[in-house]
Image 1: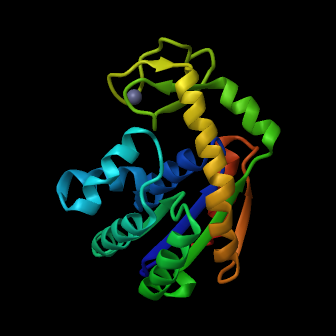
Image 2 (image 1 turned 30 degrees about the vertical axis):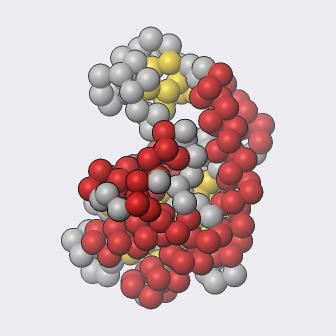
Length: 221
Ligand SMILES: [Zn+2]
């Protein structure tokens, strides 16, 4: 494989999308791209008015402004792809506006045959089951674990110096907001991309390992 690739990974909250992106990135040596992390980094290194406005949005767990997000995603993509073999977009683009601005640009940059779009699907029931069992790090909400013999509330986070906790009411509200945002904003973005590109469906109700295998099969790299 000598060409650079882009993989757009979509899925509702708790679909396992983040976990799968992480595993895939480590295995293939690709760059794991999340809008929240790149946006945060961009905020720390830029101080124009448009960027400053995003700080409050970030603090309240809301989506960044679409125009600004597009600027960040495209600038970062052009920079990252100079050295990376590939980029995995973990839930990006998140809105129809971003999809229209970002997706065709990435296709232009890497070539249609090097762009993959995967959608990890789980049912609403499975979503509810998973949310009940989720433990979140009190230092970094990207550190998510499923309650088990090994992980219980109070367990030290394996990825840092935080502690795993159940979601409190505030966090449940944030999760509800993200779920609503996914349905109202991200689903139209996926529909738009479906009109331009093949979207492969991945069954997310399997084990992490089996889901990963299906992703590898779908990529056919
Ligand atoms: Zn942590």
